[in-house]
Image 1 (cartoon, rainbow, N blue to C red):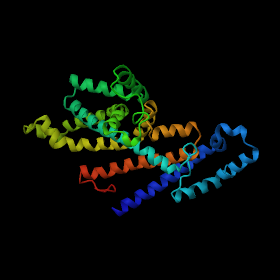
Image 2: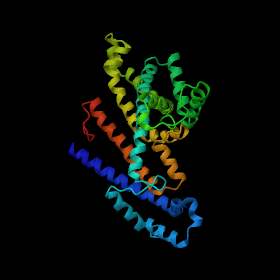
Image 3: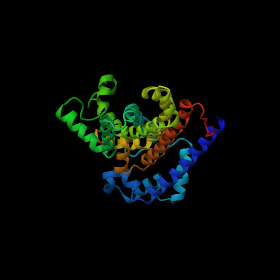
Image 4: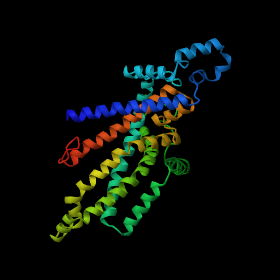
Length: 325
């Protein structure tokens, strides 16, 4: 176990160094001017000396390798810098916004996993039936549906036409956070979570269906059927564990897709999470916040893959952590 933790730690550090080099290089080569982004509309009213002082403060006049090493030194001390648009430490902005996104992504991840797994089992058990064809049509259609388009469709139907869900935000506009009730909080979460979960169902359902079909046509399933076992008996006794591993792999590996989908869903519903923060940082050239979110998203995706490895041991005790069986 200690060896596994050590290898994962080295992999994470290597990943972060690689992501830091690539992201810093891309930002350095982009036309983003941190001084202009910091000053904003007051750029024309400042003297050259004042702009030079600000440039020296941000270190924009230094060579890129010097600025990169200085930035890495700050990260090693737990300092990701200060956000230009929020005027507070980047780590505080990420923590505050990710807390809201975590509830959204967690609910969507859980719903898509449960419904995708159940639909895959139903389709696989009744292969070739009308129910199987309907589930596959649903999955293939959703797999090719953009998240932002589905979000706008749900918004038009349920918020504008039927008026049963809020149009935007994580809480009623203008209401203090301390006075927001649990139902109001959930009410504002329904449409963004539904958008993300509906999109995520397709992959899990299709892969679970195919894996279950393989199990039902295996030699041990045919032997069990010859002994009088029913289809559902074979699924319960032999299928669930075998089809759980690919479903778990897909579900935990979908952290990157979940994060990307949250960016679009939060923008459509004006949900103040980390995804909307990424768009604000990009549009307003907030380089420290943009780089901080990139590093955080790398940790988020790495955590998903690590949790997938750990869950294998729970589903099948024969699998040992570290890849040895």
